[in-house]
Image (cartoon, rainbow, N blue to C red):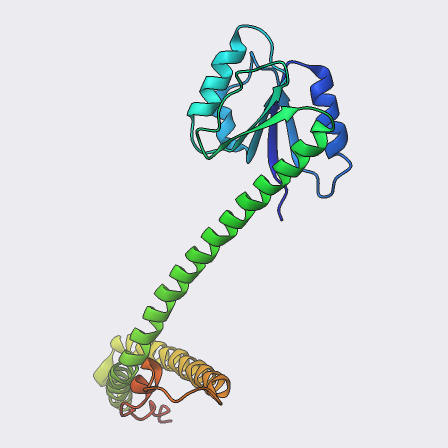
Length: 241
């Protein structure tokens, strides 16, 4: 799990000392930032994975609670004092409440650890979904290249053959165009090499799929098998010397 960023908002030094002291004994410890209830910035809260709130004093404490309880996004863990009968209710899924009783730092660390693990799991799931979408796009591109491979080979063969015929002509007949035709000839050979590598990679991938499909129930032909069954064209001939 990557290192998490935790913001502690409190006006009591003992509250912060108890949490930081207990958290420093844990591994891996998150990156901790401490801010007072009167000076913390709501806009900066979006950059943290978890906000721990407790030990607030003064007139701004209620506004801070309302602001954090009403916002969505970053999870908030509120440590309520025992003498506060009207602690905020867990009306929002991102807002959790822990009573400040005996061994409360241990309880806060347990609840915070579960919240951070859930956040990390959600991030990994989103990365996996994005990776799956990227793989689908790459697979679509690969299928298109496989389908167009015969047409590309035919086009390259035609261009290379005509370039060979022009280069066989007498030098005065070409004049200054001979250099341009030689450049076209070299570029076509380079494209031919790229297509050879792509064909080799496709054959290796198909062989890998065949090995892993052995012993599996019989199924209809796959997309790659249907594409590979199409008639292939001859490879581009090597240039005549």
